Length: 471
Image (cartoon, rainbow, N blue to C red; front, side):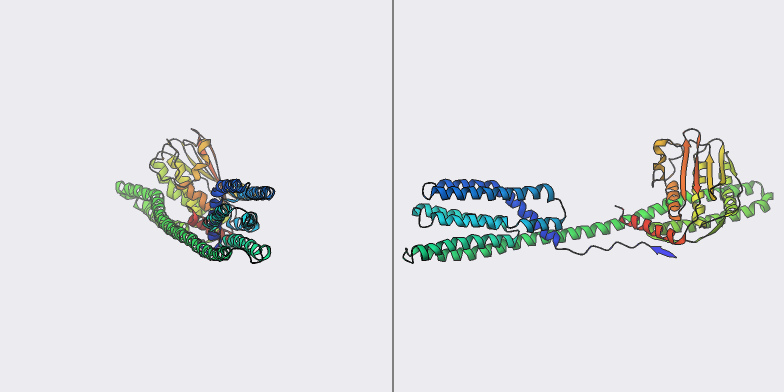
């Protein structure tokens, strides 16, 4: 079966992001105006002191201060706890606390009761200007949330208009000066102007964040496409590096056999089968390399079945004995009986990389490959008398493209051999462990737990999915 990695579906577009950005913009604007609002309350109280009832003015000022403190608590909790949180949480918090701003409008509108038709005309004029400024100021700072700015304007104007109508109709019984009627008409006109201004400002804010959202989506899309292109290049580079790493060994063996045959033609009957076998090994390696490329690209062809251990060991000896002999090393591969359940080509690739690395990092002595059993499960061990691996590097050597610094033999490698071992053993359900002493040698132990076709396919798909998501 062939398993291909699926690209994760893109999340649906959600307006919560835009709404949350409007909330954050609202909170920033209101936070920035807190000091100005407090100063304006103090100036208003000072201006009206002595011109209206001092007791009622003091009650108004205390109530305004309490509402300001309540608003400050709401803003502080949002800025400290929720400003960087999830949009849904921010929106829920805002909906629970949005009533604080209409409450402020009640207080500012209620100021009309203190000064209208009771204070001197000059004081009334200044007070009306202050309320007009408060309304315009509120429209500008509350515009990111249209429902709140509408509530604020409606509450403020209706309280002002209600107080004015009460005074004109009930207190003065329609006997007041005519400018009272013009004043009520101006309040209604001002109300409509505020509503239109609020809608336009809110529309500007919303369009800004919608454009920002689309830009973010476009940037994310371009980033995904760029990452996909980079990953395609990386897959190609990894394939070429892997091919260079693995094909070198059988090609080298083939060259040694050819040189041997050229110098001793009488050995043709003995060497010709080995040359043929080495050529077959190269072809098999090409097949495995293409399998690895498909694995990294998100598709792998798994063939789980019984693999005879004796044939596996014989193939390793045929391929790697000439390489070891060319370095003056001994390669001892102990015969083994029995079968393991695995993918034969991938298992050959794993063991080939382990033996190849052992030969590469060994200058004196040799390499021993044998099979032991651990609770009835075959365990292939690859021993060498090479340079060894320091404890600080033993975890990292299974990383992709990792090469041990200042380590003999790493200068012509790509750091892929043990990464491939780790990747393939994880897919097949086997496990690999390492014991090493610097200067004395290393032993890699491959526990061949029987592979399960379905589980191996699922792990291959999972690895491919992780590779596709990797930044």
